[in-house]
Image (tube, rainbow, N blue to C red; front, top):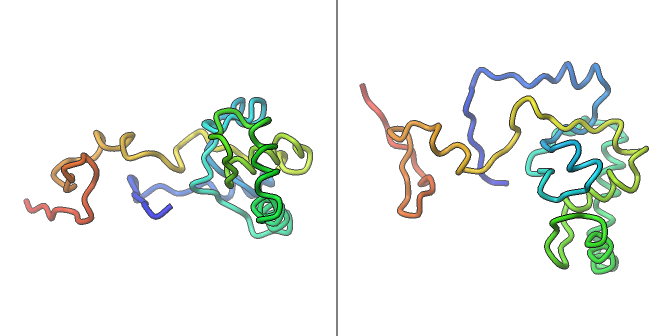
Amino acid sequence: DWDVIFTDMNFTLPVEEYEASGMRLILGGEPKGVFEEANYLKLNTGLMLLRVHPWSLALLERMLQYGRRAARRRRAIEAQRTVKNLCSGCIDDQAVLLLLLREQAARWRPYTYLERRFLLQGYWEDYEKAMPLSAISISPHGRPASTLKATTS
């Protein structure tokens, strides 16, 4: 994604916790919706933390195989049968990761952590009311404009 907003400059990711527990992939998601239901709306691959490790490289390589031109249509049909709430004919990184976590759970799930203590990503609508309007220029469409207003005291 191209849009980033930090809402707490003092926040520190619990990287040591992830490392101590052996996690190699951290992303936002709801465990039941991801691991049991393979629900597209319960996982967000907009921000993924990957440990530099052969396992991570193998995961990325496996995910890329689903996007290769020769297999894309067949994989999209396969994804439709497994992934809930996936648009017709779609195959993207989020759908592929859901497939892998479901169909090859023994290989990918033990090192995957779905962070629920804080949000790794969100939608503008989730933060709009929490941001002080004096600090943000709002476009006529209700979205943040490209520049911030300077505030003086």
